[in-house]
Length: 397
Image 1 (cartoon, rainbow, N blue to C red):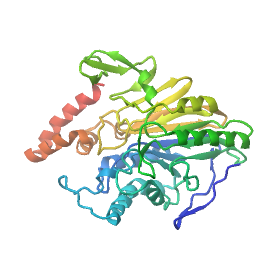
Image 2 (image 1 turned 180 degrees about the vertical axis):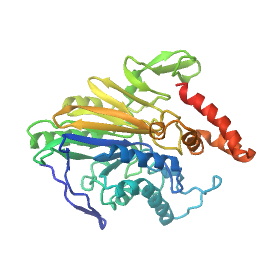
Image 3 (image 1 turned 60 degrees about the vertical axis):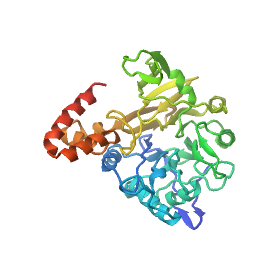
Image 4 (image 1 turned 30 degrees about the horizontal axis):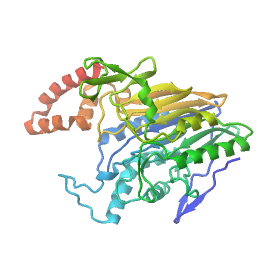
């Protein structure tokens, strides 16, 4: 049986050593937050949204699936493009504050959480292991990889036990797929060969320990390149059209995937065989990712559920229907399937004047509009105009 034990790393105690288990009603709820992607000076709309979602969903586990902070802008000056942090200690101080904005509300609610990295997290001089030690200072951080140097520290698994705690009933895979490795090698795309080998090895180990496969969800930041088969050619004026080159447009094929997409992940890195490994091991019910902020869909490839979750960030790109989170509900009586749904900003706050204005004054795509409002004065009058335009934009999808 796999047990959590208290781990000491560089003097930091990873305190969450309790078993995660199904509730008495047989359910286990996971909340995925992807691409929070904020800084030490926050856009408050996202954090207000997340607070409300935490309280509504009351998840048993929160998974942060990369770009948890905007790591490449932590040294920015508050005004202009100048970099005003010159030392590693100064950068770590800002990183602690940025991560605290994400993690403190989770810790306050005593919700166990796990993390992986995205391409933005370590775009700085703070390594993945150094960042992990900051996560590990939180009592409700689920233990990550500290003892297997064959893979990154954010490649690990999380066992979920039966409601009576007698046996491992479910599993969560957390896989590194982005950023730089400990040797400085850029990794931005496919899950790497050594990570796939680790998964196959660990899957066999779990199978032997439990007299059969343990079903699971697998989380990573970067989508697999194979999702291109969810798209179909279309005309420029078609609803949902995405421009991929001069005169060429595609859109999500509704016969292959349910949801919406405003972008496509193009990945030319070689295929290292991740899907083949999943099919061979036969223990992954769903492969889940973020990274593409404005995409939200589900589909199947070779019998494996593929789930794209939108971004939560207001500091990076997005639109009025995409910013939010995803919920997974697993039933221990049938772990071969799961329920999933998304909760977005307007699901929480409704489509009223206050929520729309908060959105506009926080969302990245309205930076120019906000500047215009502030420069013109007459915020209420101009705000009403923007409100009307925003509502039109909101309901046209």
